[in-house]
Picture 1 (cartoon, helix red, strand yellow):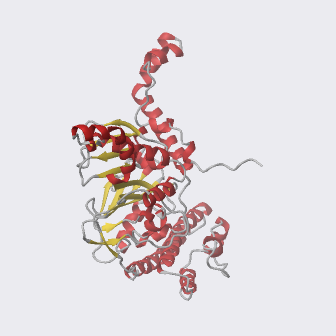
Picture 2 (cartoon, rainbow, N blue to C red):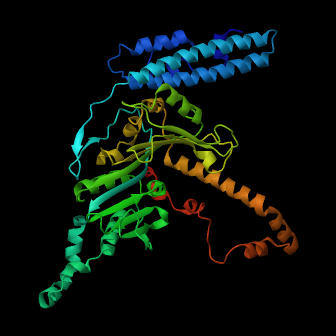
Amino acid sequence: MSRNSIHSNLGLPTLNTAFPLFKNTNQPLSTFPLWGKLFDQVMPDPLSNTGEKLAIANQLLSQIRKSQIENIVSETIEGEDGDEDQKQKLTAQFNAEIKQVLNVLHDGYRDYPLLDTVMVINEKGDAVYQLIRRPASGQIAVTDWINFSIHKTTFDNVKREKLKVYNTIENQCGFPIDTLFTNSDYAYAMGKVLKDIFGFGIESKMPKGINYYEETYKLENGCGHICVGGQNDTILVMINGLGCTLGNYGWEDDLHAWLRLFAHRPKITRIDLAHDDFESDNISIHWAKEQFDLGGYKSGGRPPKFNIIGDYWTPDGSGSTAYIGTRKSSKYARIYEKGKQFGQTDSKWMRAEVEYKAKNCYIPLDAMLNASQHFVAAYPCFHALDYSQQPVKLEVIKKTAKIVWDKAISITQHQFGKYIAAIRDFYQDDSIVLDILTHEVDEYPKRLEPFYLDYSNSMPPSAMPA
């Protein structure tokens, strides 16, 4: 059976269906002449750019590898005489195609055009570059963490209203009433703003301050912190991944508007952008390493450091993480096996995260509105995700909950299953067993707490019935 007919029987996409950007081509998607033709068609298109070509090449590389496996499996099933020779020929042909695609990807990364650097002056008077962005075809990434700071004068109106009652004290006794508006007042004023924007406010004050601030307040449901006191009279707000997920629908627009219109000297100090790939269709640890070898993380100057930690070299199901850059740099990325991190040893769920910090760069407030564009701009190889789509929030929550719940049941069965069986056999009443084994107060393991929260306000509003 010919390779082309095998492609047809297996239902592999043609160029028209895989890349609707290109028309008038009905050939099967896995031959180098076709790949070369694809690039010939891209070149004269004035709307095309190098990122678009890199995205298509990466997509095609995935399709070729998939086709290679399916063709070899098909040859094995047929079991014809000489099938080993045929499989070797197919393997050699596909490997040759893959090598040529990799070579052109390498050249594409090498010649990747750098954007003009826009320099701005930060609050210290130093010149730093502004975070760049590149076109993205859709919602590829979401904001998964954000830290921002504002100046205390943002709440001068709140301060004035509270201190009006104390004016007579200052006039009669000379007592400095400014001291009556404390760090706690600033924190709770900020907490009210967060309650309106995100839907959660302050839960409690922590024993000690963090990040060199005098006082720190924990947000509800473990969604982040507010830090205040010192640090040039600034207030630092830290919203973690859970907070970004649990926050009211459209919090990015509301926070952006509040910072632009009401906050004094607002500054994003950190923002994390994330992309999820549930089936490893586009990214994997092997893909991450291959992109490093091809120069896919180089954006001018020396390439960033690259390291893999975990079971990549000796797989045991615990998962691996590829790190690009260093924690001290302004840009730091992680590509890791998210499902395995939660304990599902056979999970295909991958996640790519880019962490930007305002050390040697300026992060514009618009970054929270353009997560996908800033994510793609992180590294040339991230254009491989340009035709993918970030799963909707509900799907991420559901998948996380299922994996963590299944793991919780597995741990309970493995560690306590025999004890529970013995106790159940003794009492012959499941309600008694449950009363004995559970606390009187409803408390849940910390890992399960996020899945008992109400996410309804974080979802898009449903359509009104006609």
